[in-house]
Amino acid sequence: MKKTGASLVRHALEQLGVRYTFGIPGVHNTEIYDELASSPTITPVRVTHEGGAAFMADAVGRTTSCPGVLLIVPAAGTALAYAGIGEAFLDGIPMLVITGGIHSSHGFRYQLHGIDQLEMVRSVTKARWRVARHEDIVPTLFEAWRIATGGEPGPVFVEVPVDVQLFTGDVSDLPTAPQLPAAAAPDAAALDRAAALLRSAQRPGLFLGWGARDATESAIQLAERLEAPVATTLQGISVFPATHPLHTGMGIGPAAVPAATNAFADRDVLLAIGTRFGEIATGSYGIDPRWKLVHADINPEVFNANYPAEVAIAGDALQVLQALLERLPAGAPATAGTGDLRARIARDKKAYLDEWLAHDSGDRVNPARFFQALRQRLADDAYLLADDGNHTFLTAELFAATRSKHVLSPTDFNCMGYCVPAAIGVKLTHPDQQVVGIVGDGAFLMTGLEILTATELKLGIVYYVFNDGELSQISQAQQLPYNRKTCTVLPEVRFRGIAEATGAVYLPMPGDADIAAVMEQADTHARQGRPVVVDVRIDYSKPTRFTRGIVQTNLQRMAWGSKARLIGRAAWRRVVKPAGSA
Image (tube, rainbow, N blue to C red):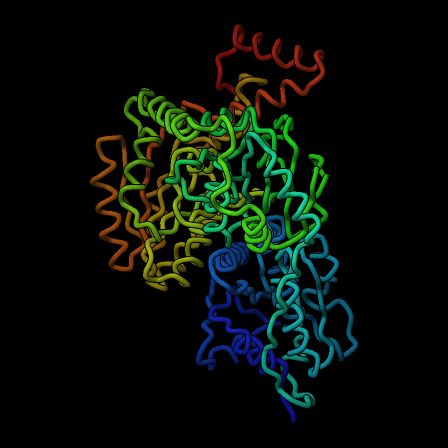
């Protein structure tokens, strides 16, 4: 039969259960957009910037069973989407990127958008294709989907040349989407060794990353069976409920909150599942590994990269946890010396919160009071998205995440501008849940105009813009070694103007006394399908444990001469020039 390439793309996406695509139409993909306009199941979403499209698709991949799908113009569109593709790649998020391509048959050179896109995205994709024949389109998209979701998930890239989209070609049949293969079972011998090590441990602990996102109940069972404290990575912040008495918080080293630092200081065996022990997860590699490590991950390349493993288990987190539960039956004697563990965790958590609540924020908003009030207002199934910046770690330290995959933030690619568009992707696919964003003023300036898309689609999202006039995570990191802030102090921004220009409701939150009332107003507008921008005059004067921990770790790692030079320069500048000057 004769089919256009564009119609074949539509068929494949419909078979795969895609509900939304994100992007901007252009010369090289209008045929696909025209096909999707007639699809009964797929809605193409036009965005303001292709980077925003990629973040929307990323959020869909994090919170649903389907990868997010980009439909963008080649070259320029791919370049603008690159940051979001890279975030998905380093964070292990499935994404299908479909672009047009230059005309492949007329023979002319120097065409519009004429670059080698496959080379351009090689470092941020699991696999790449340029489809030359109509009969290859559907099988290629099915294979791309399989690779995007298999093993450690990630983005894949498919280029369909414009002439292949437009003209008809021969195809023998229109296959339906195949069943995806199940993950391979983890090695039984490795599981036996891990179980024996955990069984003999006096003080085991669990460290969970994003890879454990679908294994929360099994992780709870194992933690209770071992009476082991549980910490998470930043990306995995929601995989274990913060309300559980064995939950300690984000991280396990000197950059972690006190409950985690103290609980993991004397662990003799650490079971780490779904984490690569990357820079943020380890507080800039500040962890002192005195424990024997059992490391389980879907990607065997992560083993022994930064910390040596006594036992390495390649496999899906849920399968690994279930297999360990079978080998560590209920009713076994509790591990020794942990009778007061839960009480100690509770005391440390309360003391840290009290420390924040006692902090004098002056006429600005105290972060702990803000997050306490927000937690009380949000339902258990609400989604919270944090951008990249100081507010990311305030969220991780002060907001109690209770449901897996419901607190999201960019992590290893560490890209600012994530929150505003990502919240749109979540609200589209979860229209009945509350969706809120926590975004710094600097990050908001990068993608805030994407609120136009939220307004057009009548999405009731509340964006809390933490406004302190600085790029705070970096300005705080500049303070100790430099005693001045270079290019991290922002000019005055009138966020009311941005809100009104994009059709959002604007609400100021000047101080603690305004928190409850403003949150109530914001929720009211959001329930009516209006995006809301809340201008939070946040107090960033108290650094997070994460910030203090990584500064200390990096200073300690330096050679004495370099350390003395940095400290001496900062001290001298305190004498001769006021802090904060450029």
